[in-house]
Image (cartoon, rainbow, N blue to C red; front, side, top):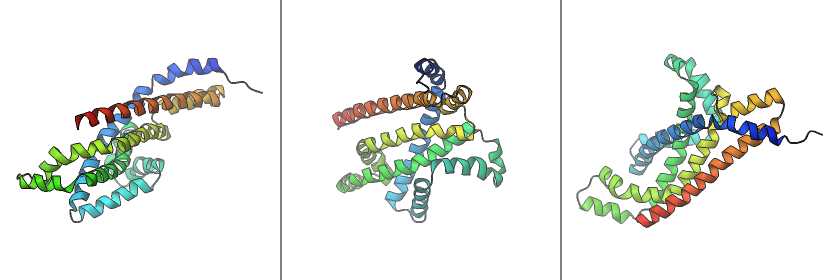
Length: 222
């Protein structure tokens, strides 16, 4: 019976950590894209803009209702057949786009719910002071809504980080693909993927810690 090779794990973790920067870079870029798109969608849906609010609901339904890996394949391998310009799209950029668009569907729902939790009287007060809808949202409503949405949004960011492990399926060299390569050479699959789990679990624990700190800071601010 083969025993667990702790020496292999100790040697492999530093190798995988070299590619941690790729995972984190993908995740943070996807986070930025997701937040920007999510804010736009949340405002469109909250304002009930004709046509656009309906399209936003379809967008949310699509990205929440289909597998992330299928979305990656659809955009990276599928759309290039009908959109020639996408042939120059790098695998890394494709992952960022897919993760960003996918997370925006979840971010927007979290934001929309948080916006709804803010007292409607505050919006009316803003109008009374002569603010526009956009000004009231940016200055008064969104800061409060984001505080409420932090737990859900941090969970979504954790999902982004975990989802980045699928990048190897379209050729991005990162933690998962490196572990796969090392395991294929040594046949130490248990040890290799134990390393992957340890790294991603550690990232998730750090994000949980960061979430608690943010909640405390936001609570003190308001």
